[in-house]
Image (cartoon, rainbow, N blue to C red; front, side, top):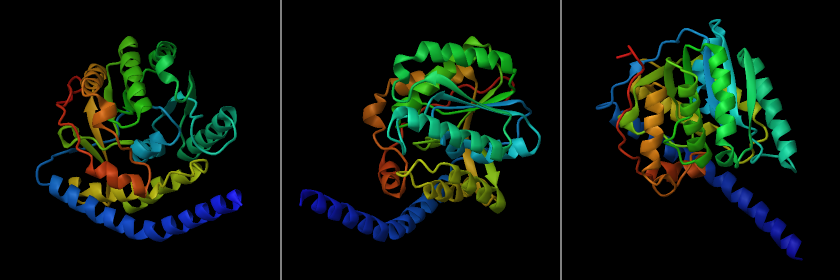
Amino acid sequence: MQQSRTGFVRRAKRLVVAALTPPLRLSHRARLEARYRRLSATVRVSPLSLPAGPLLAVFPHVDDETIAAGGILQAAAASGTEVDLVYTTDSSAGGLGPTPADRASRRRGEAERLAASMGLRSVTTLSGVNEHLAEQTEAVTAELAAHVAQGHYAAAFVVGPVDAHHEHRTSAAVIAEALQRAGFTGEVYVGENSTLLPPTLLTHAHPLSRSALRAKDALFDHFGSQASMDFVVYHDLARAKRWLTPGAHAAELFCRTDAAGLAALCAAVQGLDPDRTLPHRIGNVWTLGRALRMPLPPLRRPVAAPGQE
């Protein structure tokens, strides 16, 4: 009897969610349009031209790279630029699969298919274990520093610390330390993942045409293990961001800095008690509303990459 009642409740909940999601999405789209239209009056960002390669992309979990920078990474690879993708963890904590090992294997397969479809040069998963990276920062930092030193990269696209996900913040700190240890002197582009960047940090936008946004949307089809994610929110966000890039159909937004600037930004965020000040993540239509209502810290922009001002 109890199992039958539980099953009924679950089915009823799914029906309610299915009925309410479309109107909620429409409401959020209107809020996003208003948000970025308003920001366009005061925020000025520069067009992000494709950097010379090779390029490095470092993110904590499979799909984070697509959310933050899928459009520009795909464009770079299509232009012939060599792009290497690195994950700081095995992505084993979330998604479908009975055990962490099963989930890690499935997500690794998703990453490999993603890399093949985008034309990336390589995909590497470091030794970090999802949800345990904070206990493994030294080992993962050393691995990433060695990877960076060998790669001779011109620029890096990375997860940033202004993020409601604690492991995104930890990864940002690991990346900053690894880049500095490796003597990396190139541009660092911090993207947007679980949290939008504060307007004070926005410096660059990568414009997306209609076909480029469609191609980015298609990348999310690789992530079948992420049943709780609703990737259409990132389509709606990209469309609204076009207000900061006149003439574009959509856009990805970034904060350009360097390795030292990323480290400084990590320290500034840590001083804000981020678990309290950044409580809501973007992940689906339902969480987007809470994230949009969350005040963003007015952080100062970190230093720019040498010679890029």
